[in-house]
Length: 137
Image (cartoon, rainbow, N blue to C red; front, side):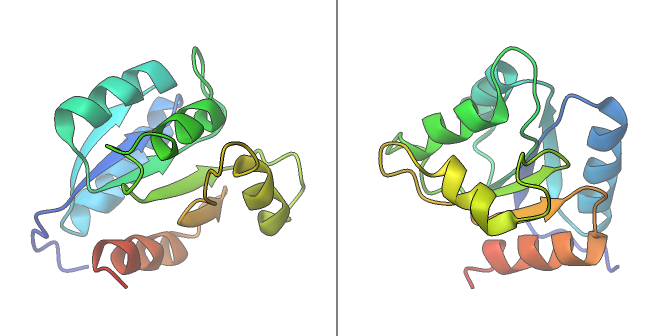
């Protein structure tokens, strides 16, 4: 990992502090700035104040679920273009990523997430997804 600064900021949303630390460290070692939130309400605040380039989002969150947060940001013209990579162990669909993507995007013309990574996290897959989304390709 080269660690050269990319100038891109990632909002890491997870209620497990060890996961936040792990992902933040991984992203920072790969040149990204990070901010974090432990629930959907805090994530919404950070989204508005920090203006991240990408969001790493867990689904199982206290106060406001990751699904509700996702649907809110994708329904808002000011935030809908921020790419979201869902990083979760909980899908309700086993390992069927496509079924979960269809579920999360069922209401109000909400698009499927730009990325979807199952826990335990495949760091190579996660970093490749983030690089692709932040490079515009």
